[in-house]
Length: 474
Image (cartoon, rainbow, N blue to C red):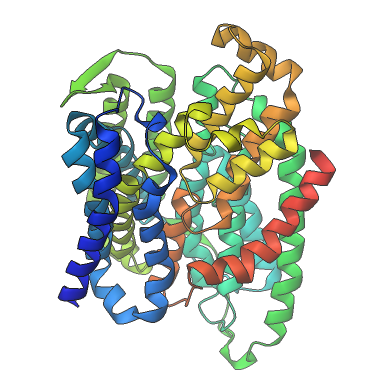
């Protein structure tokens, strides 16, 4: 296995070394204009590893997935650093300081705080109860974010369905609704919408996509109820809880204060401007550093004040957040060329794609397709800037945005809906997807593989829904 790993590393380095050496001399400030499309091969490699290795070498993957993630990160980073030198150091440091660390800190804080909130009582996982939980989570997602709602609601729905054999579909629909589509109504719901808010889109403008969000949610909730009713009839009735129902109650409710602190910190970072701080040559906003400190503080306070018994009741462990941290470290490093090419717009290797998009429907699918595999925040921002340049060239951003939100509502709605909705297409399409999968597997639910999730659930269900949304709204 070690020899195979060394061989793969060598092949990967050879694959990238020669082309990088040809381009390094020409590299300028915007590296995305120089990188070819094949530079995303390590990114494709880590995605395929996540998709295939749990199927074909499950034992190896279980114990060595951090090494696999590191392998692909090194396969890209070594030749990138060798030939691009200072530019590569800056790009890697930038994505770690600006993107990865804040990403993991937010997930860690929400994971830790939500793990201290214990919904006590008996919830029998009937189709009606499960549908109501999904509805509540969907509504909460626009208030406390898809990550916050996912971390808060995943454990109650897992416990209420612990007795059931057929429950994988419940977690999948949870990812569809709570972890993605439910976050479409406010900038708090999903990172791309928050980026739009920072660029001048009014806080409640996203209510323009309420019809699309409501349509998608109703279709999915009705579909889920029908599917779950079918599977519920197949359950062995002796497996169902037959004890006296225990009244519902919430223990560890003081964690809601810490949850509010997390939300306040995120809002603070987006609305207050305190200047930049230089960290190893990377300019990070001071308000973002304050936000990160508050996130750590909220998580630590939750650990200090929450009784151990409450976390045991939630079957809390650090394994899911550690898995996400290891895998996304590799993803964030290898995603550098993909994001750089995308940000280069019509000067990059994907110029053909960006130039070919002109209608709201095309924006919906282009943004959504890329958001299924790439970070949906920069994807949203790229096409947001693209549509500003298409309709308001040469006009200052503030003035152009003011016109866009009034005159080109279908375009911005399509970009927003595509970025938020289609994050549900894969496990890596949005931050909470993989977290929910990991928590469910920790609880004993045998979740589908990367491709199993796509071919069994997201393609037949979501893609069909999105085609319908295209014809109805775009």
